[in-house]
Image (cartoon, rainbow, N blue to C red; front, side, top):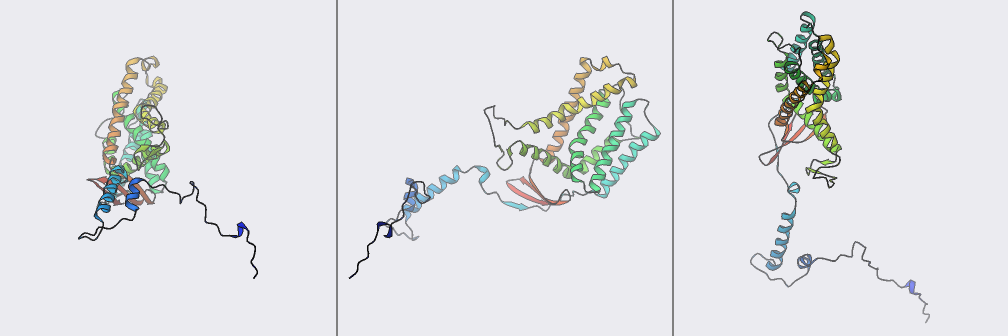
Length: 321
């Protein structure tokens, strides 16, 4: 009988297992207890009570170690709807403000340059956000809300309380009162824009919105090394706007009969920065009051239709815009 000669390579060999392969696992002692077969001790419930109790304890410990952000939070659909498009009331208020500014410039121009310049800026601001919203220019509308509201409000405060030639404050042209009426009418829609603006700055700085933690912390007192964008925007709101208006007033002050040296003295400069700080804090608190519960925004049509997610009473609520 012929017996073939077999080499060692022709004989099937069992697969080699190396420690770095996925199937090489060294179970921990707790895992081994839960995975090993044991002699079942049947109870009335029909399972091994000793094994199940140990595994349940391990599961409870693992759940306790989970961070709070990873735990499930129920999502409830809210019946409240946010109107992001302009209502007829919004158009009426906006056109009224534009008309009053144009009327003041045409019929009652100030003998000083700064009040007229301030009215021109306000006219441009309201025309910008109105036209941007009407013609669906979302980026321009975002910029006008994020920066234009601060420039108007702080400029008005400085013009009334700091500069020598105040802007007009009367009931014939109540543009500032109507501005806050507009701010209240658009508090939710513009609040979403402001919340998104700050959130995008935080994300660019490396802030994880879901875990509410900075992704790249360095040993610098708990602050992220990349948090400069948010800080820069806050500094601009609390000091930069006043500096801008102050420089403009310095450049045109000679036309209004104001001495350049008087503007550069210590008291006027401190007055500008203190008023800028107070007005900026008021505006930050205003936006924070309407937006502190927001957790996310998903747009179907940018600044037209979407879903807002916000947190309240232990629930995550979804509002359809």
